[in-house]
Length: 515
Image (cartoon, helix red, strand yellow):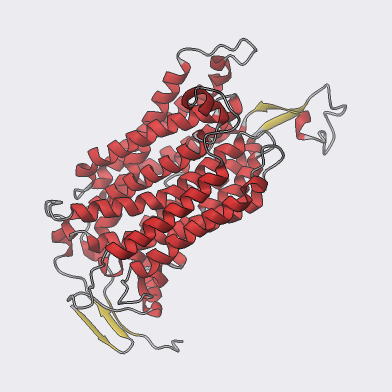
């Protein structure tokens, strides 16, 4: 039930929310909406895949440092900050146009425009020779990911109402599959189709200069696609008007932020926030630094992109295969079973990267061990399958406990916890590599090795005796083990708790001049 008068809002917990979400899923009558959500999440994944691929392109240039990569990593932060404007997305809209379409249309049009703007100056931002303009690239992709994060707020909220209530668990399948497909396409096309080496080897009969497409033309193409698809969605997809539904309440911006604050005050949410924000520490180095270390060791960006494409296809398949398990009432149980395997994988990656130079035989003989790439694909496959399964399980759990009446805000709040865990560990793991590395000066280039505050005047004069990668890997693995044993019982309890622990029951009067 609900009551409203002026600025007075009362949201009571619906009696049947928990029962409905636990009924058997059935997509009959929901397939069109399922594929529509899949399309929107795929559109969201495109800029994410492109901005991620830029990391590999930058690392392949010898004049880009890990400090530069740490600066560029700010492009990932919008998905961890979107909670700040999620209540605006939930509360401000044009009713006749649609609650979600009011935001979806302009956001996706702007993404297309930014693609075209980047295309117009990409030759200066990412030159063939010379150092890339890291700061400007970071600004551009930060804005693009800001818009993609806003689109995510919109679609997450729409998913809770566009699907039947007993099918909301499938929103995680659409999210994971769509983002993966979009990221795969964006990353693969940018790295492989613009690569002269790859195109001459696999796509051309006669060698030529450059890839089959340039980064400039590719960005123009993505801009046009975004504008075209957004226009088609605007014309043909009608949004359901929920104004006259019994549980609908028009909540203004102030109320939405107050509701957000009340959600944050829930004891269960506070504990979940701490658990989620610290959940990625154990795998931070494996997830964020290992690929860059492989590039440093001599693995080509084209080979890594092809492997990443294979992994993305596996992830899409995994999303549909495990959907029936994560759409049930206990998705966190699957999440917890995977954690020990992911921590063990840290050791496997550390050993693999340590022996990579020897397996590649970078000594002038041009010989690579026949076991190297099969082993790399195997390890990458295991990592991606485990990581993707945990991601889907987490999203399914969030969909279960979210209040659809303020869906965008609630889902964004929960997703912010998970995104923040990834983002801060990504920036920290990249930034700490050099700090945790043990170095000494090369005797051939430095005359003073001891008793000097600055024994090396140039980084090239230093020899890394112990890489910070391995030091950081050890620290993160130990923290991950402690985190697992400290939180597993709490997480098991959370997925069985009654809905009243997650939903807000408000009965308060709010005035515009609240003191």
